[in-house]
Length: 410
Image 1 (tube, rainbow, N blue to C red):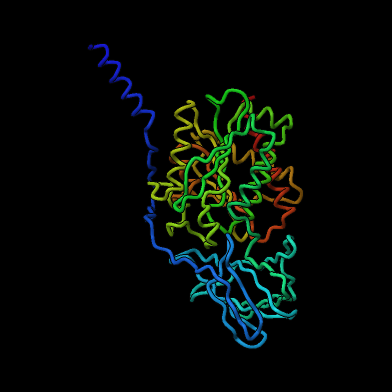
Image 2 (cartoon, one colour):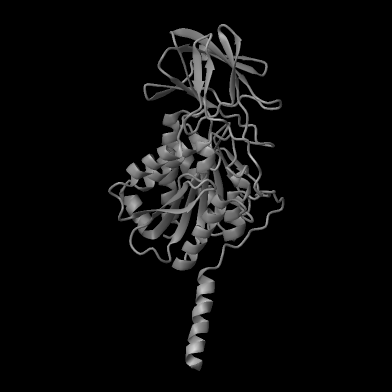
């Protein structure tokens, strides 16, 4: 009986250890990430019957809060954020059409204190293109565009729309035929019940492999960073000699959409809890970050592994890598210098733009550093960086990451 009780106690201890929740991480400047209310946009078709002009926000990724007539050739678009205060990243997306063919002007109106950020992208017949400069007018803070409308709806958006269903279609096609080394799962649910997907990538034995974490779409409109993430991940999965060697040595956890609610709701910045998820990497108030951290933690514990590198893909007004200045004593003290040198050598006419500073607010790159003693980098692509350039940068950054990490063990 004593032996039974002792074995039972050991079992309970093992269960408690295996179920250990993720440790919180302290930051110099805490941010309140408790859930805040949002003002949802009403899904509808807006009508200007006397002009024969109509606009709709009835699709995932839309953002249009109102449409009002200014004169016979112009209407005002009302664009509001999900809540405030919020980063000045005014996002919009809508479909517009008219009963009869006509040229028509649209004027953007944001709440006081906010201004236009993104040059309009247009989608017609499944093709996206940026608006011609001759149809884009800016006077002081007022932005107006000129469109040619007809009965066929024209999609107008701040950035090319990539909803959660678009992301799912992309990674489903990407991993088709690679299921023996790309292990897909939905590890959790967002506030509104949308899936949180992860691609767990490795070859051979998964235990004891050092782990690289890739994140993207914490901020819904930042699709240029997502495009770089796509090319980066695609390059890791090319089944080339270097990819094969790399995945036999390392393991990659790739999270292709960290904020699916915000993406589908057409949010400027926040999740359905009204919070910037890239300020929640401390005590994990939001379910998206909490479940991601718990998944990573459980993976590390179960496989006796450690995170050595975390890359979080975003967008801003220019291409830039935000890094931590603390490097000595971390898992990869020389990685950043070696990687950046390799990028400049392998991307034509390219100069790395690095902004170094230890994370004071609870962002992901700080979580990698303070929580795992790992290299954390916020990988930012410019809002207007051309798609071909993004693909090149994404491809080469992945290739050179693999080379640098493989060479460190020689």
